[in-house]
Length: 431
Image 1 (cartoon, helix red, strand yellow):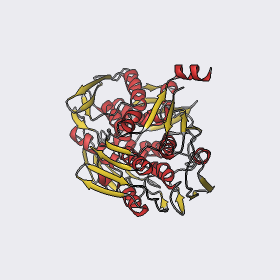
Image 2 (cartoon, helix red, strand yellow; image 1 turned 180 degrees about the vertical axis):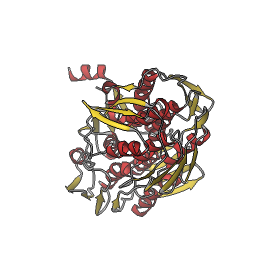
Image 3 (cartoon, one colour; image 1 turned 30 degrees about the vertical axis):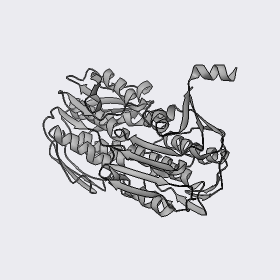
Image 4 (tube, one colour; image 1 turned 60 degrees about the horizontal axis):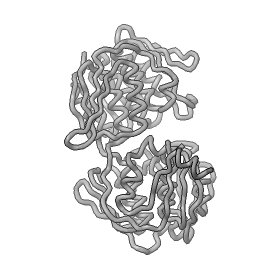
Protein backbone atom coordinates (compact mmCIF):
# COMPACT_ATOMS: atom_id res chain seq x y z
CA UNK A 1 0.00 0.00 0.00
CA UNK A 2 1.50 3.35 -1.08
CA UNK A 3 2.50 6.12 1.30
CA UNK A 4 3.25 9.80 0.88
CA UNK A 5 6.34 11.25 2.56
CA UNK A 6 6.63 14.99 3.24
CA UNK A 7 9.62 16.96 4.54
CA UNK A 8 8.08 20.06 6.08
CA UNK A 9 9.36 23.60 6.16
CA UNK A 10 9.49 24.60 2.49
CA UNK A 11 7.48 27.71 1.57
CA UNK A 12 5.49 27.26 -1.64
CA UNK A 13 5.64 29.39 -4.76
CA UNK A 14 3.97 28.92 -8.11
CA UNK A 15 0.65 27.94 -9.66
CA UNK A 16 -1.67 25.00 -8.96
CA UNK A 17 -4.32 24.23 -11.61
CA UNK A 18 -7.58 22.99 -10.12
CA UNK A 19 -9.12 19.82 -11.56
CA UNK A 20 -12.74 19.10 -12.38
CA UNK A 21 -14.91 18.37 -9.35
CA UNK A 22 -14.95 14.74 -8.25
CA UNK A 23 -18.37 15.11 -6.61
CA UNK A 24 -19.77 16.47 -9.86
CA UNK A 25 -18.02 14.12 -12.27
CA UNK A 26 -19.36 10.92 -10.73
CA UNK A 27 -22.99 12.14 -10.84
CA UNK A 28 -22.53 13.34 -14.42
CA UNK A 29 -21.18 9.91 -15.34
CA UNK A 30 -24.31 8.33 -13.84
CA UNK A 31 -26.43 10.73 -15.91
CA UNK A 32 -25.04 9.15 -19.08
CA UNK A 33 -27.27 6.12 -18.37
CA UNK A 34 -30.32 8.27 -19.09
CA UNK A 35 -29.70 8.45 -22.83
CA UNK A 36 -28.76 6.15 -25.68
CA UNK A 37 -26.65 8.95 -27.20
CA UNK A 38 -23.05 9.77 -26.22
CA UNK A 39 -22.31 12.18 -23.36
CA UNK A 40 -18.94 13.91 -23.63
CA UNK A 41 -17.53 15.28 -20.37
CA UNK A 42 -14.59 17.66 -20.54
CA UNK A 43 -12.38 18.89 -17.66
CA UNK A 44 -12.68 15.38 -16.23
CA UNK A 45 -10.61 14.46 -13.18
CA UNK A 46 -8.69 11.18 -13.36
CA UNK A 47 -9.32 9.63 -9.96
CA UNK A 48 -9.85 6.28 -8.31
CA UNK A 49 -13.55 7.11 -7.87
CA UNK A 50 -14.12 7.89 -11.55
CA UNK A 51 -12.32 4.67 -12.48
CA UNK A 52 -14.51 2.68 -10.07
CA UNK A 53 -17.69 4.14 -11.54
CA UNK A 54 -16.44 3.63 -15.08
CA UNK A 55 -15.97 -0.05 -14.31
CA UNK A 56 -19.55 -0.30 -13.02
CA UNK A 57 -20.97 1.57 -16.02
CA UNK A 58 -19.21 -0.82 -18.40
CA UNK A 59 -20.88 -3.68 -16.52
CA UNK A 60 -24.26 -2.05 -17.18
CA UNK A 61 -23.57 -1.65 -20.90
CA UNK A 62 -21.73 1.65 -21.26
CA UNK A 63 -18.77 2.35 -23.47
CA UNK A 64 -16.36 4.51 -21.46
CA UNK A 65 -13.65 6.16 -23.51
CA UNK A 66 -10.98 8.32 -21.86
CA UNK A 67 -8.93 10.66 -23.99
CA UNK A 68 -6.88 13.87 -23.88
CA UNK A 69 -8.74 16.78 -25.42
CA UNK A 70 -7.50 20.25 -26.38
CA UNK A 71 -8.22 21.55 -22.86
CA UNK A 72 -7.38 18.48 -20.83
CA UNK A 73 -8.84 15.10 -19.97
CA UNK A 74 -12.20 14.08 -21.45
CA UNK A 75 -14.47 11.08 -21.05
CA UNK A 76 -17.05 9.92 -23.57
CA UNK A 77 -19.82 7.74 -22.15
CA UNK A 78 -22.17 5.95 -24.52
CA UNK A 79 -24.90 3.52 -23.44
CA UNK A 80 -26.95 2.60 -26.52
CA UNK A 81 -28.52 -0.24 -24.51
CA UNK A 82 -28.67 -1.20 -20.84
CA UNK A 83 -27.40 -4.78 -20.99
CA UNK A 84 -27.74 -5.35 -17.24
CA UNK A 85 -29.71 -3.50 -14.55
CA UNK A 86 -27.70 -5.20 -11.79
CA UNK A 87 -25.11 -3.20 -9.85
CA UNK A 88 -23.40 -5.83 -7.67
CA UNK A 89 -21.93 -5.36 -4.22
CA UNK A 90 -18.35 -6.00 -5.31
CA UNK A 91 -18.50 -2.85 -7.46
CA UNK A 92 -20.84 -0.60 -5.47
CA UNK A 93 -18.94 -1.17 -2.21
CA UNK A 94 -15.86 0.53 -3.65
CA UNK A 95 -17.61 3.91 -3.75
CA UNK A 96 -20.84 5.07 -2.11
CA UNK A 97 -21.78 7.42 -4.94
CA UNK A 98 -22.10 4.51 -7.38
CA UNK A 99 -25.45 3.83 -5.64
CA UNK A 100 -26.73 6.74 -7.77
CA UNK A 101 -27.04 4.49 -10.81
CA UNK A 102 -30.28 3.23 -9.23
CA UNK A 103 -32.40 6.23 -10.27
CA UNK A 104 -31.24 6.37 -13.91
CA UNK A 105 -31.68 2.59 -14.28
CA UNK A 106 -35.28 2.73 -13.03
CA UNK A 107 -36.03 5.81 -15.15
CA UNK A 108 -34.72 4.24 -18.34
CA UNK A 109 -35.54 0.52 -17.95
CA UNK A 110 -38.28 0.40 -15.31
CA UNK A 111 -36.35 -1.93 -13.02
CA UNK A 112 -33.02 -2.26 -11.20
CA UNK A 113 -31.18 -4.31 -8.62
CA UNK A 114 -28.49 -2.29 -6.87
CA UNK A 115 -26.42 -3.18 -3.84
CA UNK A 116 -26.61 -0.95 -0.81
CA UNK A 117 -23.29 0.89 -0.43
CA UNK A 118 -20.55 -0.86 1.49
CA UNK A 119 -20.57 -0.08 5.18
CA UNK A 120 -23.88 1.73 4.86
CA UNK A 121 -26.26 1.85 7.80
CA UNK A 122 -29.57 3.31 6.74
CA UNK A 123 -30.14 6.36 8.91
CA UNK A 124 -26.45 7.19 9.51
CA UNK A 125 -25.46 8.58 6.11
CA UNK A 126 -28.95 7.77 4.95
CA UNK A 127 -29.84 6.28 1.63
CA UNK A 128 -33.36 6.11 2.99
CA UNK A 129 -33.93 9.66 1.67
CA UNK A 130 -32.98 8.41 -1.79
CA UNK A 131 -35.34 5.44 -1.56
CA UNK A 132 -38.27 7.47 -0.22
CA UNK A 133 -37.88 9.95 -3.06
CA UNK A 134 -37.88 7.15 -5.64
CA UNK A 135 -40.98 5.66 -4.00
CA UNK A 136 -42.67 9.06 -4.20
CA UNK A 137 -41.92 9.01 -7.94
CA UNK A 138 -43.78 5.71 -8.21
CA UNK A 139 -41.07 3.08 -7.84
CA UNK A 140 -41.74 -0.05 -5.79
CA UNK A 141 -38.77 -0.62 -3.49
CA UNK A 142 -37.87 -3.87 -1.73
CA UNK A 143 -34.77 -4.51 0.37
CA UNK A 144 -33.42 -8.04 0.50
CA UNK A 145 -30.00 -9.46 1.38
CA UNK A 146 -28.27 -6.10 1.06
CA UNK A 147 -29.80 -5.21 -2.30
CA UNK A 148 -32.40 -2.69 -3.41
CA UNK A 149 -34.93 -4.19 -5.81
CA UNK A 150 -36.77 -1.40 -7.61
CA UNK A 151 -39.53 -1.57 -10.18
CA UNK A 152 -41.57 0.99 -12.12
CA UNK A 153 -42.78 -1.00 -15.16
CA UNK A 154 -45.14 1.79 -16.27
CA UNK A 155 -42.58 4.50 -15.74
CA UNK A 156 -42.00 7.03 -13.00
CA UNK A 157 -44.53 9.77 -12.19
CA UNK A 158 -43.87 13.35 -11.15
CA UNK A 159 -44.32 14.09 -7.44
CA UNK A 160 -43.92 16.69 -4.72
CA UNK A 161 -40.96 15.72 -2.56
CA UNK A 162 -39.87 17.56 0.57
CA UNK A 163 -36.58 16.42 2.08
CA UNK A 164 -36.60 16.39 5.91
CA UNK A 165 -33.12 17.90 5.85
CA UNK A 166 -30.78 19.14 3.16
CA UNK A 167 -29.04 16.27 1.37
CA UNK A 168 -26.82 16.78 -1.65
CA UNK A 169 -26.83 13.09 -2.55
CA UNK A 170 -30.60 12.69 -2.27
CA UNK A 171 -31.23 15.86 -4.28
CA UNK A 172 -28.91 14.70 -7.07
CA UNK A 173 -30.34 11.18 -7.10
CA UNK A 174 -33.92 12.44 -7.28
CA UNK A 175 -33.02 14.73 -10.19
CA UNK A 176 -31.46 11.79 -12.03
CA UNK A 177 -34.77 9.94 -11.83
CA UNK A 178 -37.28 12.80 -12.17
CA UNK A 179 -35.99 14.07 -15.54
CA UNK A 180 -37.61 11.08 -17.31
CA UNK A 181 -40.71 10.88 -15.10
CA UNK A 182 -44.14 11.66 -16.50
CA UNK A 183 -45.38 15.03 -15.29
CA UNK A 184 -43.83 17.60 -12.98
CA UNK A 185 -41.77 17.02 -9.85
CA UNK A 186 -41.09 19.64 -7.19
CA UNK A 187 -38.14 19.12 -4.83
CA UNK A 188 -38.40 21.17 -1.64
CA UNK A 189 -35.61 21.79 0.86
CA UNK A 190 -33.27 20.83 -1.97
CA UNK A 191 -29.51 21.22 -1.72
CA UNK A 192 -28.02 24.33 -3.35
CA UNK A 193 -24.41 23.23 -3.85
CA UNK A 194 -22.54 24.13 -7.06
CA UNK A 195 -22.47 20.43 -7.93
CA UNK A 196 -26.30 20.47 -8.05
CA UNK A 197 -26.22 23.35 -10.53
CA UNK A 198 -23.54 21.58 -12.57
CA UNK A 199 -25.65 18.43 -12.80
CA UNK A 200 -28.72 20.45 -13.81
CA UNK A 201 -26.71 22.34 -16.45
CA UNK A 202 -25.62 19.04 -17.96
CA UNK A 203 -29.11 17.54 -17.83
CA UNK A 204 -30.53 20.67 -19.50
CA UNK A 205 -27.92 20.33 -22.25
CA UNK A 206 -29.27 16.78 -22.70
CA UNK A 207 -32.81 18.11 -23.07
CA UNK A 208 -34.12 18.04 -19.48
CA UNK A 209 -36.52 20.74 -18.25
CA UNK A 210 -35.31 21.96 -14.85
CA UNK A 211 -35.72 25.30 -13.06
CA UNK A 212 -34.83 26.56 -9.60
CA UNK A 213 -31.46 24.87 -9.13
CA UNK A 214 -29.33 26.97 -6.81
CA UNK A 215 -32.41 27.56 -4.63
CA UNK A 216 -34.12 25.25 -2.15
CA UNK A 217 -37.04 24.55 -4.53
CA UNK A 218 -36.28 22.78 -7.81
CA UNK A 219 -38.96 22.01 -10.42
CA UNK A 220 -38.51 19.25 -12.99
CA UNK A 221 -40.86 18.67 -15.91
CA UNK A 222 -40.22 15.17 -17.19
CA UNK A 223 -39.40 14.51 -20.84
CA UNK A 224 -39.80 11.34 -22.89
CA UNK A 225 -36.11 11.04 -23.74
CA UNK A 226 -32.78 12.79 -23.38
CA UNK A 227 -30.11 13.35 -26.00
CA UNK A 228 -26.33 13.44 -25.92
CA UNK A 229 -24.38 16.56 -24.99
CA UNK A 230 -20.96 18.05 -24.36
CA UNK A 231 -20.45 19.40 -20.85
CA UNK A 232 -17.44 20.75 -18.93
CA UNK A 233 -17.18 19.53 -15.33
CA UNK A 234 -17.18 22.43 -12.89
CA UNK A 235 -13.92 23.12 -10.98
CA UNK A 236 -13.49 21.25 -7.71
CA UNK A 237 -14.25 23.62 -4.86
CA UNK A 238 -13.00 21.13 -2.26
CA UNK A 239 -9.65 20.74 -4.00
CA UNK A 240 -9.54 24.54 -4.28
CA UNK A 241 -10.12 24.97 -0.56
CA UNK A 242 -7.68 22.23 0.41
CA UNK A 243 -4.85 23.71 -1.68
CA UNK A 244 -5.67 27.17 -0.33
CA UNK A 245 -5.20 25.81 3.21
CA UNK A 246 -2.01 24.02 2.11
CA UNK A 247 -0.54 27.23 0.68
CA UNK A 248 -1.40 29.16 3.82
CA UNK A 249 0.01 26.42 6.07
CA UNK A 250 3.34 26.21 4.26
CA UNK A 251 3.61 29.95 3.61
CA UNK A 252 4.82 31.58 0.43
CA UNK A 253 2.98 32.81 -2.65
CA UNK A 254 0.69 30.42 -4.55
CA UNK A 255 -1.95 31.07 -7.20
CA UNK A 256 -4.76 28.58 -7.74
CA UNK A 257 -5.92 28.68 -11.35
CA UNK A 258 -8.92 27.38 -13.36
CA UNK A 259 -11.21 27.56 -10.36
CA UNK A 260 -14.38 29.37 -9.19
CA UNK A 261 -13.47 31.60 -6.22
CA UNK A 262 -17.12 32.25 -5.36
CA UNK A 263 -17.56 28.55 -4.55
CA UNK A 264 -15.18 28.86 -1.57
CA UNK A 265 -15.95 32.41 -0.45
CA UNK A 266 -16.88 31.33 3.09
CA UNK A 267 -13.50 29.61 3.50
CA UNK A 268 -11.61 32.56 1.98
CA UNK A 269 -13.32 34.94 4.42
CA UNK A 270 -12.21 32.79 7.36
CA UNK A 271 -8.65 32.60 6.02
CA UNK A 272 -8.49 36.40 5.71
CA UNK A 273 -9.82 36.66 9.27
CA UNK A 274 -6.96 34.37 10.32
CA UNK A 275 -4.38 36.65 8.70
CA UNK A 276 -3.85 35.15 5.23
CA UNK A 277 -3.50 37.59 2.32
CA UNK A 278 -5.90 36.58 -0.46
CA UNK A 279 -6.67 38.23 -3.78
CA UNK A 280 -9.03 37.07 -6.54
CA UNK A 281 -8.67 37.69 -10.26
CA UNK A 282 -11.33 36.04 -12.42
CA UNK A 283 -10.80 32.29 -12.14
CA UNK A 284 -7.63 32.59 -10.02
CA UNK A 285 -7.02 32.89 -6.28
CA UNK A 286 -3.67 34.13 -4.96
CA UNK A 287 -2.67 33.11 -1.43
CA UNK A 288 0.25 34.91 0.21
CA UNK A 289 1.58 34.34 3.70
CA UNK A 290 4.86 35.39 5.26
CA UNK A 291 6.47 34.24 8.51
CA UNK A 292 3.84 35.81 10.75
CA UNK A 293 1.74 33.49 12.86
CA UNK A 294 -1.94 33.10 11.98
CA UNK A 295 -4.78 33.95 14.34
CA UNK A 296 -7.21 31.33 15.66
CA UNK A 297 -10.66 31.47 14.00
CA UNK A 298 -13.86 29.57 14.81
CA UNK A 299 -15.86 27.73 12.14
CA UNK A 300 -19.13 25.82 11.97
CA UNK A 301 -19.97 23.56 9.04
CA UNK A 302 -23.24 24.26 7.24
CA UNK A 303 -24.89 23.35 3.93
CA UNK A 304 -23.78 25.52 1.00
CA UNK A 305 -23.15 28.45 0.96
CA UNK A 306 -21.98 27.89 4.52
CA UNK A 307 -18.62 26.43 5.52
CA UNK A 308 -18.26 23.09 3.71
CA UNK A 309 -17.95 19.98 5.87
CA UNK A 310 -15.38 18.65 3.42
CA UNK A 311 -13.11 21.60 4.25
CA UNK A 312 -13.40 21.22 8.00
CA UNK A 313 -10.39 18.90 8.29
CA UNK A 314 -8.08 21.00 6.05
CA UNK A 315 -8.98 24.16 7.97
CA UNK A 316 -8.45 22.42 11.29
CA UNK A 317 -4.94 21.50 10.15
CA UNK A 318 -4.32 25.18 9.39
CA UNK A 319 -5.48 26.14 12.87
CA UNK A 320 -3.13 23.72 14.65
CA UNK A 321 -0.35 26.33 14.53
CA UNK A 322 -2.50 29.48 14.83
CA UNK A 323 -2.17 31.74 17.86
CA UNK A 324 -4.96 31.18 20.35
CA UNK A 325 -7.82 28.67 20.49
CA UNK A 326 -10.23 27.93 17.66
CA UNK A 327 -13.52 26.07 17.93
CA UNK A 328 -14.55 23.77 15.09
CA UNK A 329 -18.20 22.69 15.11
CA UNK A 330 -19.29 19.86 12.80
CA UNK A 331 -23.04 19.88 12.12
CA UNK A 332 -23.29 17.81 8.91
CA UNK A 333 -21.75 14.37 9.56
CA UNK A 334 -21.05 12.41 12.70
CA UNK A 335 -17.62 10.80 13.08
CA UNK A 336 -16.01 13.62 11.08
CA UNK A 337 -13.18 14.13 13.58
CA UNK A 338 -11.24 10.92 12.88
CA UNK A 339 -8.26 13.00 11.77
CA UNK A 340 -7.84 14.49 15.25
CA UNK A 341 -5.81 11.61 16.78
CA UNK A 342 -3.51 11.63 13.75
CA UNK A 343 -2.99 15.39 13.87
CA UNK A 344 -2.22 14.93 17.58
CA UNK A 345 0.58 12.51 16.61
CA UNK A 346 2.20 15.47 14.86
CA UNK A 347 1.96 17.52 18.06
CA UNK A 348 -1.39 19.26 17.60
CA UNK A 349 -3.33 20.12 20.77
CA UNK A 350 -6.95 19.23 20.04
CA UNK A 351 -9.78 18.02 22.27
CA UNK A 352 -13.11 16.74 21.00
CA UNK A 353 -16.46 16.85 22.79
CA UNK A 354 -19.34 15.54 20.70
CA UNK A 355 -19.63 17.63 17.56
CA UNK A 356 -17.14 20.24 18.71
CA UNK A 357 -13.36 20.30 18.59
CA UNK A 358 -11.16 22.83 20.38
CA UNK A 359 -7.84 23.50 18.68
CA UNK A 360 -5.21 25.20 20.81
CA UNK A 361 -2.49 26.43 18.48
CA UNK A 362 1.05 25.22 19.11
CA UNK A 363 4.37 26.81 18.16
CA UNK A 364 5.34 23.95 15.88
CA UNK A 365 4.49 20.44 14.66
CA UNK A 366 6.86 17.50 14.33
CA UNK A 367 6.83 14.89 11.59
CA UNK A 368 5.58 11.40 12.40
CA UNK A 369 3.96 8.31 10.91
CA UNK A 370 0.23 8.98 10.51
CA UNK A 371 -2.71 7.03 9.12
CA UNK A 372 -5.25 8.40 6.66
CA UNK A 373 -8.77 7.43 7.76
CA UNK A 374 -10.82 8.96 4.94
CA UNK A 375 -10.45 11.30 1.98
CA UNK A 376 -10.83 14.66 3.71
CA UNK A 377 -8.86 13.58 6.77
CA UNK A 378 -6.04 12.47 4.47
CA UNK A 379 -5.46 15.90 2.96
CA UNK A 380 -5.43 17.48 6.43
CA UNK A 381 -2.44 15.30 7.31
CA UNK A 382 -0.61 16.35 4.15
CA UNK A 383 -1.34 20.01 4.94
CA UNK A 384 -0.01 19.63 8.49
CA UNK A 385 3.03 17.77 7.19
CA UNK A 386 3.97 20.73 4.96
CA UNK A 387 4.70 22.77 8.09
CA UNK A 388 5.91 20.02 10.45
CA UNK A 389 9.59 19.76 11.33
CA UNK A 390 11.17 16.65 9.83
CA UNK A 391 9.43 13.91 7.87
CA UNK A 392 5.74 13.08 7.94
CA UNK A 393 4.68 9.80 6.33
CA UNK A 394 0.99 9.44 5.49
CA UNK A 395 -0.18 5.83 5.23
CA UNK A 396 -3.25 4.55 3.35
CA UNK A 397 -3.05 7.18 0.63
CA UNK A 398 -5.57 5.30 -1.49
CA UNK A 399 -8.04 7.61 0.27
CA UNK A 400 -6.26 10.61 -1.28
CA UNK A 401 -6.24 8.98 -4.70
CA UNK A 402 -10.04 8.90 -4.58
CA UNK A 403 -10.31 12.68 -4.64
CA UNK A 404 -7.02 14.44 -5.44
CA UNK A 405 -5.52 14.28 -8.89
CA UNK A 406 -1.71 14.41 -9.14
CA UNK A 407 -1.38 15.69 -5.58
CA UNK A 408 2.38 15.22 -5.28
CA UNK A 409 3.04 16.76 -8.71
CA UNK A 410 0.92 19.84 -8.00
CA UNK A 411 2.52 20.51 -4.62
CA UNK A 412 5.99 19.53 -5.82
CA UNK A 413 5.82 22.03 -8.69
CA UNK A 414 5.47 24.77 -6.07
CA UNK A 415 8.47 23.64 -4.05
CA UNK A 416 7.03 21.16 -1.57
CA UNK A 417 9.28 18.24 -0.65
CA UNK A 418 6.70 15.51 -1.17
CA UNK A 419 7.02 12.09 -2.77
CA UNK A 420 5.06 8.90 -3.11
CA UNK A 421 6.59 5.72 -1.71
CA UNK A 422 5.39 2.83 -3.85
CA UNK A 423 4.60 -0.57 -2.36
CA UNK A 424 7.77 -2.07 -3.84
CA UNK A 425 9.86 0.64 -2.23
CA UNK A 426 8.13 -0.05 1.07
CA UNK A 427 9.31 -3.63 1.03
CA UNK A 428 12.91 -2.48 0.53
CA UNK A 429 12.64 0.19 3.23
CA UNK A 430 10.92 -2.08 5.74
CA UNK A 431 13.46 -4.83 5.10
